[in-house]
Length: 124
Image (cartoon, rainbow, N blue to C red; front, top):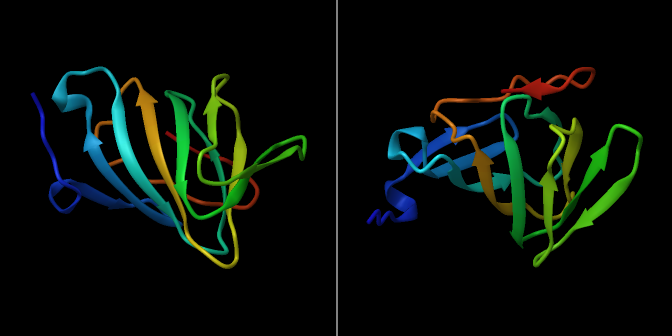
């Protein structure tokens, strides 16, 4: 059994926020669990070429926008999953941070960070 507290997990500055990584590849479960903070007013172009990701919003607000421009509001209680390695923009509201609980499969190693660029997707 694994028991971890937020103050004890690996925290990574991923580009426009923090990723608190509760479960990693080294834990042997095959998936990662993160508590991700997206800073207010930020817009990140992201793509996970090597992972599937599902995110559940627990606080704040924002939107996820596909590259065709379709925007989907993100508020507490809403989940979205990137089931096709979808390139997307993750946008946090200008007024508040967005907080997500995210699952990655396969699991993250732990040190992954984004290289954010407005014209190409950051991927890992």
